Image (cartoon, rainbow, N blue to C red; front, side, top):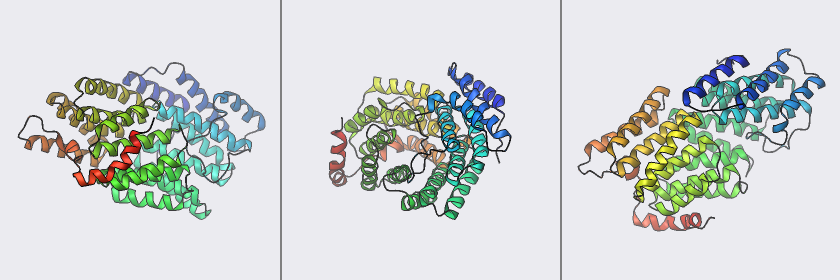
Length: 405
């Protein structure tokens, strides 16, 4: 089991990592160190913190006072008791650390929240464990993440709390997906959808996961169904709404409609601020630009991908998008750039055990080798070909995408 570093050790690790990535986090790191130290101090005694101690931490977290974490209980209102409210504020701060790729500070902070919420209600404590699982997963510590997600499902099942159990099943699904076990991921997403509050956060994540799996299997009709269900269930101008738009654009690209796909990618990219999500959207945009033969745009997007990889600090998404970039660069007849991107993506996938991406990279390389013409597009692009009859069947759902503003 992963043990959290001390706040100072976590600060040093993340500061060194940011320097290695060439990312300047400025004064934010010092602010996050203070947050991690505060959480650690509150949880150190093993007792319920005093009102005075909570008030001191509350002053430190004032910028997060009006926000809630992304993972909440979908059937309950925001907490009003001091300790659960404080736990949420610490978790919002930890999410800011995650977005910046500072996972050691985030893990240290949320581990302290887990200790702190041992004195709180079951929902607050279980959500903290769930959050710790997500950070461990992003750190590629799959055994630790699996343990945390299993704890969430076990406790939520014992408490007969279906919405909370749905969150745990989402975590299991994401972990299975990263490991390349797509049948297990699908089963967990379906279980989460069965237990989730319709239209809630876990429901949306289940729709998104099932949509992504349908795209990978070229089941584009099912992908459109899940995508519009996710789009309509998410709040207007929310991050989840723009993620739905991004995935719908991927469907359009696979169905042979690169122009509306590019409009969707551009629309989502203008509104999403999380580097991890920006990276995924750029991975779609570079494929659409290549399909449209916009060579200068492909080069511009590829540079943005390289920059965003450093900012996001997410090897899973980086490996995936680098392989997409390789296909796009090969499609516009840049074999050298394609080879560099493919090798970088495959190296990441092999290093972290992303078996599905290793397979994709090997298949793409094999396709290039077999190709007898200089403009071969590789497996990633060739798999986008959809028979005309299916194109007509998909057109209505994609026309709705093209009409979005």
